[in-house]
Length: 156
Image (cartoon, rainbow, N blue to C red):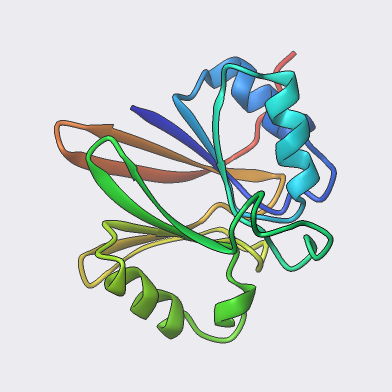
């Protein structure tokens, strides 16, 4: 299973479109800012499985459409997803990690800072895919998670 992780697209979906078209992920996870981008991507790629949460710039969106936080089970692994603004990720990851552990997550995904981040925090993987110049790529195979944060390389 391959999962594309994006965040903070802020109405610039061209990189996400290219990644969906060239990488053909099983799932796309959007970690907030801007939820309208998720709606547009879903209309453009109706067969693409998309999972999203709201960010701090999604104040006009209803949490009924996309929640602020969610747990997703993909490929037998448990993911805690949030944008990060409600847990102050610009200052510390401690609340984020606590929530991830409380959700029994194998991996925590967040955005908001626009800074790529990937680490193993006491056995729990933590990823921020950055913004539109970088993305996260997760492969789940044989019960193992392989995660990378990569630069967007323009094709053509």
